[in-house]
Amino acid sequence: MKEAKFTTGSTMRHVTVMSLSASVGILALFMVDLIDMYFLSLLGEIELASAIGYAGSILFFTTSVCIGLSIAIGALVSRSVGAKNFEQAGRYLVNGYAVILVLTSAFASLIWFTIPVWVDLLGAKGRAAELSIAYLKIMIPSMPVLGLAMSSGAALRAVGDARRSMMSTLTGGAVNAIFDPIFIFGLNLGVEGAAIASVFARFSILGMAFYPVWKHHRLLVPFEVRKLSSDLKDFFSIALPAIVTNASTPIGTGYVTAAMAKFGDSVVAGLSITGRLTPVAFGVVFAVSGAVGPIIGQNYGAKIFPRVRSTIRDSLVFVAAYVGVVSIVLFIIPHWIGQIFNMDQEAQQIIDVFCRYIAITYILTGATFVGNAAFNNLGKPNYSTIVNVGKATIGTIPFVYFGGQWFGATGVILGQAVGSSVFGMLSILWVFAIVRQFEKQPATQSHLSTQDGIDRRCSLRDTNVAVKQCP
Image 1: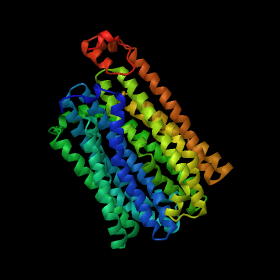
Image 2: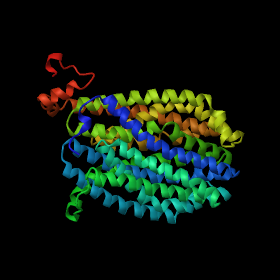
Image 3: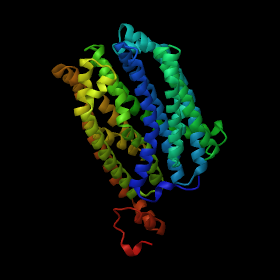
Image 4: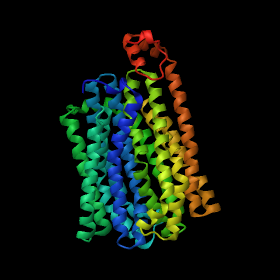
């Protein structure tokens, strides 16, 4: 770890390489979730699919807490690397590990003892509720493992090692795929078997991500309690807003699930299929937030604000192009998806609406992800919180409620998509306003007046530096 690799070179190339590398691992994990659903559908119980939908809303919430904690790690480490303060980067990581282990253990314990309450709040009844509880009882205790694994992956991306971060999640996906059929069918464990396989996968991700952090990049420094307190403020100034930001999304999703439950298990099963299909189809979009964060963070740490703007702009172009292509594919194949998972007519209708009308709105969902990454790495995590909490409340509840009243189950998911799109647009407009403020700061001009600044400005496609100034 000797340089900040994202402060030079094409920002579009960095965005593309980091996003695609990160998405490979994410796609592997979520593809396994989709395969989970396929295996369980072969057991012939519609309640299994709806149970995974209910459980998924709660797991989404716990995972979002882990994501929020890992965002703080990634932002602090990438800024320190950008400022060439590698000792500080290691200290942030080690102290972050300690905090994450304590917080996730406490949170997992709280959730585990109240699982039936949460399942009931989502509207699950009978067999679907029983299966959801059984699944969650196995998954929730592994939350600390997931938190440490995600933070290790964030640290790898923060130093520009997207390949090893990708390999850790690929390994997790492979482990899950191998053990799924063994536990579900071979040992006849059903939904509990799917959960056990997922826990094994989480441990494998942690091992594969932690090893290069420790051995290759040598980021780990001795843990000192007296230095922990001085870093807590920096950590929680990002982590708390990021947790609220990320947790707000599953809260909104939980409201949608509860709204759909009123229309029966079949539509919840359809929602569960689209919930597993979404990260597979749009895993690249989901990866953008974690992938571009280190690029923004390093350039922010180095005070090269034109590259910050370029990174954000290129990220939006990348997202729009990707979503456009995937939406065309999904528009063609909705009936095939329903047939593969043995869905009935009501569930099929949910899948049809998602593929034909909602998929394209992920351009603006992606804009929200880019906005989150920018806010968190530009020292404005509270702004990300405002946007996402607003999306999960104002952008969800009234849209979903009236959509359900006017158009039934399909109106629920259409309403959610419309509200999400509105806040995606607001998010990105706000981000560019923040970047303009940074670009006006006198410190930026003095930094770019140096030869190093000229060299870096010349690396941008949109620079106005005269040709004779460039080496």
